[in-house]
Length: 359
Image (cartoon, rainbow, N blue to C red; front, top):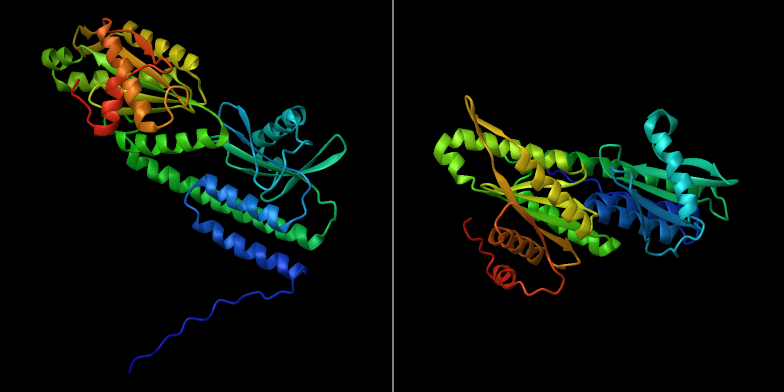
């Protein structure tokens, strides 16, 4: 005899329009939808849409601060540019929030508040010191309502919990994206990271720079001292690159003796300066390959910026790769910056074919 199990219907909260119950019903439905989001940016955007539709908030701002403490103000759909949260007040607010972050016991989960120039400012924080931190700021409603405050607090806590889950999933996934030899990110993750950074750049009006690095005359190291020695040189070069860039930047082993660096929120001038530092440090290093034996390698580096030199990731990679080849043609051991509106024939061909020649 089989038992038929019937799932219990999910209860729904029925409410009359314009009542407190309606606010809770909309907030609950919106909070449940947060778990269906697949990206942090879309998670935050959906939450802000709920704020805009359901609550009478006069002024709201969203700030993103990276690990270098550089702040970016992010436009919020449904809200005018918040005149109250101008640059001078944002500076004061971020200074206070940095103090809170230094001592986590100073603020609690959910909604916190601080006094600035006699106004009560509510804030909720996402992230911690090891990653980008998002800060949501808003002024108290012109029509205070205790039930509305409870609904907002519930929504904020759901956002924080979902964001924390996203962060942990990202940490787990990153283990699948590491190169076994160097500990850098691998080629597979480079595609993911470039997709993310191009979308972020287009949305927030920011930029980033890509460095394509190829070691010069690396083959003789393997031929003369063996592949174990060559692998050790690659590990040490990877460490040099990683130590030269910022924590927020991304370093990848593209394959063989090739590396790629994504410099977050960096223009072409910053990219060229960083490339020159990497090139000089590799050139000045001596790599132990055997007892009483050292090897020296140099690097050729191509530099291209998004969106200055390309507004598609495939073309950006191809242009940086072409600039690296130009460095080889000029005699190796140097850096070449892409030129705006230059005719990169190889870049165009490789963008279409997606075929990478052997070095």
